[in-house]
Image 1 (cartoon, rainbow, N blue to C red):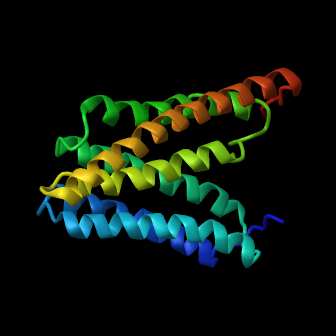
Image 2 (cartoon, rainbow, N blue to C red; image 1 turned 180 degrees about the horizontal axis):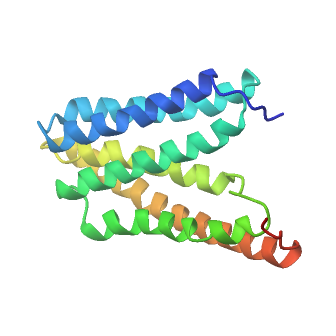
Length: 192
């Protein structure tokens, strides 16, 4: 059951993830401390996994958490593509195509609101896409170095990136289909 609690362990983990966004950007773009930036990405991935797991196991799901978790994910993905794009670790097209999907989905929110919704529930495909990207980015950052480990990290990083981007957009298309279905099967709510 979703509750209205704000201060929960999962929500604290999501807030930590949001607070790590500027830290990551500073590490990647300022002193170029890639090892520490990599550690921040790993911590972000672990907290992303734990907040959902703990929310269910501790029965601490909340309306705030349902919004905060995906916002934290999107902010981190945006920060990573900006940071890695500006460092030329990833090409410009990748740095553009990921946020473009979120802009597309954000443009659907006004249509949802006409039916009394502010968002749709996260589905497995979206979670799988985010997980793929959260694996890809640390590997791509590690792959920016020299040597065998960097070469392997680069190959696996691109494999996760390609799958992650594909699933990310596929998930976006499925959300758009859900919005269309909702618009055709529910009554419009008149605004006050």
